[in-house]
Length: 198
Image 1 (tube, rainbow, N blue to C red):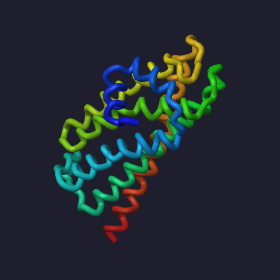
Image 2 (cartoon, rainbow, N blue to C red; image 1 turned 135 degrees about the horizontal axis):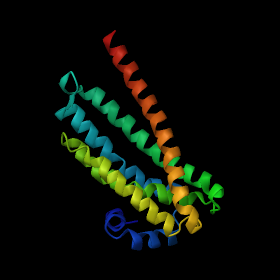
Image 3 (cartoon, one colour; image 1 turned 120 degrees about the vertical axis):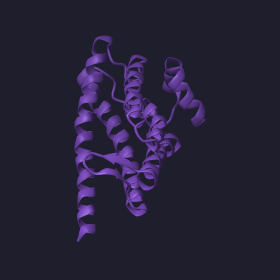
Image 4 (tube, rainbow, N blue to C red; image 1 turned 90 degrees about the vertical axis):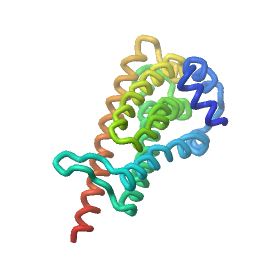
């Protein structure tokens, strides 16, 4: 897979690219090894640079910068979190398929999760620049549109009247799981900070 061509295709001509993606026989492991594992480096490295070298403004504390070791730990956890998020996202889409009269196919569900998160991966480079990191949220919203186009293609053979509910329920379930993962990630940093203070 030409990763640069795939990123350009899904971002610039998503309708055409989804048609190509549907025909490709990639397994879940191939999707991760040839795409996700590589692109997930972008948010991890960007966060490492921001936290370890540039810093960020924290309410009531001013400008904050991490020690390099702590920034590296944060980057590693972000990398693992992103991989887990994409996998859980695809798993949720596949699990909900029968509820919305759609075809269960883990490979197609993972394609939806993997390629619809491309705008986030690309835009997360903006984490390096203070105050531009909010644009990552806008890019993620474009990812929701890409996800919708993937449902319409259709990668999961959802009936037209069930595409929108299927999409919304998938996003809500993943949002809840993401919040739980963020709480766990936050707890890890609280424990790590407390252990440093002792």
